[in-house]
Structure formats: C-alpha cells, structure tokens
Length: 246
Image (cartoon, rainbow, N blue to C red):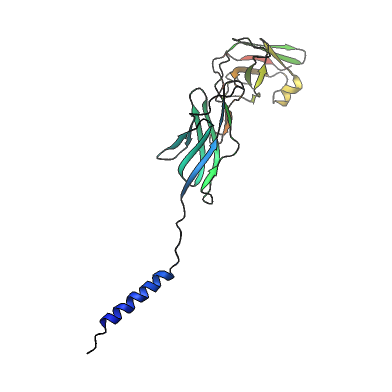
C-alpha cells in the first residue's frame, strides 16, 4: 500500500502558506497623538519675560497629561487620546488661563494649536480711592492708585458697572476694556447717552467698582460657566461707588 500521508500534509501546508500571503495587512488605526503649541509671557505691562515653566494640562483626563513650556514658550503634550479638549495654562504669578474646544482629530497624528496666547502677570496696581460725580448730563469717575503713573510708566485698570451694590468682576452688567492711565488720579467721563447704550436709564442708581489690571489681561470666556473670567485683576481694591444716571 502506498504511503500518501506525507503528500497530503505537504499539500495542506502549501495551501495554508498561500492563504497567509493572500491576506491583506490592515494597518492599526491610531487612537492617540500629540497636541502642541506655544505661549508668550509678559510682565504686567508689555515687557517680555522667560517663556519657560508654564504648566499646560489637558483638562479632564485620568491619568493627567501635562507638560511645561520651554524657553521659547513651546509645549508638546504626548499620547493624548483623540477628542475635543480644554487646555489649562498655569504659572505662579499669572493666574489660570484656559483655551476651550481644542479639536484633536484622528485624521492628524499631531494637533497644532494656532494663535499662541500672550499672557501677562497678575496686576500689582492697587486702587486706593474712587469717586463719582454728576454734572449736567455727564458722570465723571475719578480713580486714584497707590502708585503714581506717568507716560513712561503707565498703569492699567478695569471697571465693572451694575444696578446692584454687590457689583464685582463676577457680578456685573457692563465691563470696560483694559484702560491705560498715565496720571493720578485719572478721570473717566460718560454722557447720559453712553450710559443708556450700556443698558442704564435716567434716574437709575448705578454702582461702579474698579480693579487694577494688566496690559495682557488673560481674560477668557468660560464656556462651561457661560461667563467671562479675568485672571489678572488685583482684587485689593476699594468698595463700589454709586451715582444716579442724569
């Protein structure tokens, strides 16, 4: 009787080999990538500072993913799962700044965050006196700071207005832009029409509170809280003052 077993085994091995070679090799789909970008750091005015040492964290991940900026302000967050994130920027003396809705897409191995933020140190400007006076149809706000300012050494302030005596940087109806002052005290004058544009009406009592601020205010809108955040204000200030809209 002929031995056919070896021939049969060889045939099976040959077919298995052909089957393996014919299979399409499917590459693995990446699930993680890098997020990178940069920041520019300043003092409370316009002087550039060392860009290194700012901590950048991807909010909401466990374990936490964070890194520190280098001397050029660059950061690189490794092995971040694809998704949409909030980045948190922190460094002593700067307060906390956030960037929302950073889309880290699976189509890219690396996400570069555009529009590098310019971040300033917290304000050291202390408000020592605020007065409001009404003359005709105008209201004048006089603001005095602890340190004198001048053209070559300006200071920065920001005020908040409301019909509530509890007006603050967290409870307000109107907030000003960052204002440059070069004399002490500094006066700001608003006409009745300007006040009406801000939502206040004649005969209404309006309260104003003033804070020292930095040139780069680091402000951002917190989309989770639906409110504007002002990280650089000097909360060491005086009580709100009031006036009646003419």
